[in-house]
Structures are given as C-alpha cells and as structure tokens.
Length: 389
Ligand code: SF4
Image (cartoon, rainbow, N blue to C red; front, side, top):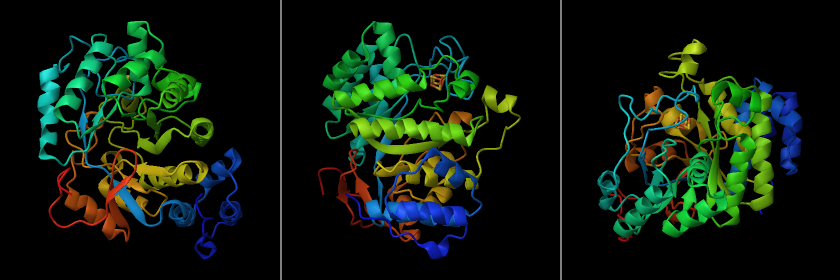
C-alpha cells in the first residue's frame, strides 16, 4: 500500500482545494463533487502540487517509458461516417484506404529488429475483412519473428467488432487472441462514456457500459488493459467525472487496469472540428494539465497515469510530470491516427530525447516493460538492445 501523500499545503492557495487536500492527505476517496471543484479551481499550480504529492507517494520520482512501435494495420472502418472526430478512417473504396497484408505488417514490424523495441502497439479501423483469423495469424507471425516483443493490441471496440462479425462472444474472441499471442490491450475507443456525448460524436460506437464490459471480460481471462478518455470536444466536467467513476469502479472490481491515459481531442481534418468551428484550436495546456491532475486524484486505485506526448506535445508532457503523471508514451514509430487529425508533434522520439525531458523535470527515468516492471534506470549514451543488458 502506498504511503499517505505529503500534501504541500503552503503551495495550495484555493481554500476549496486545501479542504480537498486534507481529504487527500488522509487517503480518503474523492467524490464527483470534489472532482468538479478540482476542474473549477483557478489554482492550477496548487492542483498540480496536490496531484504530484499523490503521485510521489505511489511512484516516488521515477518516470517510466517503454520502447514501443505503433502498427496500424487497416484504416478501413465501418464507422467512418459516424465517428465525427476521426480523420483516420476510410471506407473500403475511398482514396487512401489500406489494409496491410501479413507481409506488410512484418515488414513494418521489422524495425523491431534493432532489438530496442519491446512492444508493438497495434490498433486500426473496424474492417469487415479483418476478423479473428486476420489478427490471430498476424499475432502468431509477430511472435514467431519477434519473440521478445510484447503485443499490446486491439481496443475494446475492435474486440467487439471481431466478435460481431465472427458471431462469437467477447470472451471467446479474447481467449483465441490470447492464445495467438495477444499480451495486453490498449485503452482506446473509450471516447467519453456519456450517452449524450456519444450520440453527438460517435453515434454507432460501442456504448460506454459495453467498453467497460469488454475490459471486464479481458481482465477475467487474464488480459490486462489500459483505459483512456477522449476530452476537449463537447463533453462537460461532469461527463468527465462520470467516465472516471466508471473506470474507478471497474478497477475496484478487477484491478486489471494498468494505466489511465487521457487523450486530447484534435479538431483538424474531421467533421466535428468543422462543425464546432475549432480547426487549428486543440485543447489548451491549462485543460491538459487539469485533466491529468484530476485523473491522478480521482483514480485513487490506479498506479499509473500516462501523458500521451503525441497529442499534447513533448514539452507539455514534461511539465505534466509535476501534475501527477508518472509515465510517458514511448519511442513511437509511425503513429498515424493522431497525425491524421492534425497532431503536429514528431512521430517518434529518441531515447536520448525522452531521457532529456524526464531528467530536465528533475525526475528519474526508468525503462519499463509493458506490465510496468522496471527494466533499467541506468543509461549511457547508447541504448542497450533487448537481450544484451
Ligand atoms: S474512431 Fe475508430 S471506430 Fe471510429 S471511425 Fe475512427 S477508426 Fe473507426
């Protein structure tokens, strides 16, 4: 059990935040009303100090990252017209539509032959021709060719899609994919759980309760998962907190979540951004930091909160290390999904750059595996390939 947080009350100026700080110092769980007060505060630095105290009690000053590689095998998606925030998906005959063959997946994965990549992060569209056999064959081939690389693949939405086209229960799909090599699942596809928000931004997508149901089933069959929230579009602070409450409840039940990762909405090149007149105006740094800090404080049963630098920039992710964040997205190669909606960030970050960001924030970098086990904390200028350390 984590030590009680040492709350720095001298750095918190908002009296409401100080009262919540007393509850945090006593390790008491926060309510939705507390969460709303956290979103309302103008004392952003005080909120960060509070979230940092909780993070330090759980993780000390260690900040982790993993060397991973994103592979997006298909952008063909049956929800192309109804997920109005998405700029990545295509219909089968549309310009730019693609579905990798197994050889193409292996060719892209071959970058892992450098020995540094420890995880494949594999997600894509809901493609009618990418069913259980497509992914099972892919995972088997990846394991055969890159046995040292962990496979984190398929969101809850993709699992439910495969189950639907194969007419199988979620559980059977998960068991079959686990047998083929699936190790853990990413947390994408959550968007914001509120039914009203979903109706507006992703009308036909798996409902929030079903997303939770797929993750519960995954945890039961021994597949640990991450979870996310897409924020900064049409949702309210209350929607965000109801979403966090559903994640916290499932974590109480199963303990199967590894990390919470808030994902900032990008308005470029998608229908929602045009409708809202928000082209070129992504979330603000103020909101990004609040979203991370509130997640850290509300999700008292989560060990890890990750900042996704692809969406909020490496610079803001560095600052977020003092707002409750203890994990940075890894060295991502060829990220397509957020760059399709206007992310201007680099598509990959070198080990040296990640170390520079973490050390620059006064924290201790540690490379981890996909289960958040620390692999090494000592680094020289040359990255050590897997198996050589
Ligand atoms: S967000 Fe996912 S499910 Fe929705 S259209 Fe894009 S790829 Fe398809």
